[in-house]
Image (cartoon, rainbow, N blue to C red; front, side, top):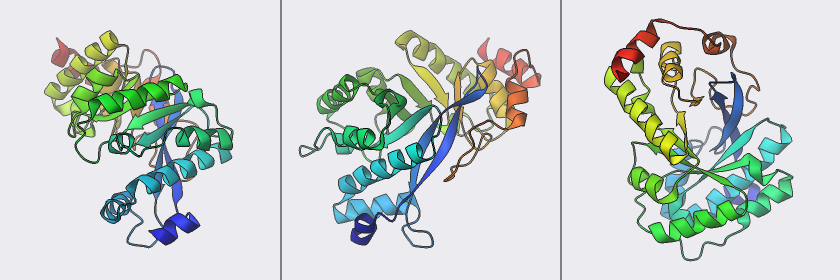
Length: 263
């Protein structure tokens, strides 16, 4: 881990998020990979080891820097979703401003960055979290919560922090065209989000029928393999098959399922 941090042996990969109403790339989630061929290539293994060794915070800060630099170097369009762990923000020794420093050094406009809160362990310091998020907002960032419906405190975080974006856990998207109760759940979340001023992002869309239902529900943003897998050089346009489906007026039998589920 010391060598990885010292030599910055990390690779940024990006997965596009699609604007389902406009039919274009809305932005990218920045992800990280460790050294190719090593036991720490997987981000899960990498961050688990970092937590065991007491260097989770320093590694995450380096990851954010690597992601921002790669995003700018590739001149990718749209927004950058930058992952931040709430438990890092709530540490007493957390120093504000490092993320902004990395963004300014790379020449990226701060209003193009969305701070995405991702949970690795339970979060209890809601007051300190709210203060930290308030600081990010004062610097011009918007906020997203990852994996709503999964994890330890996502519903309370939504209520406390009022994020601009809410990501729905992929469990509720998988095979949604075959499970009307999932469509009903997402419809309810969409209604709550509209009342709270948040935009819903459906994660884990892997099939065109899933995408059809998500579109029919009125959810405006989507992410998943149906658009592209995370990669070092991601596409800047959506696949033609998804563009055809998102074209205004396009209807399939999936729309009938959505209507029944949400009646």
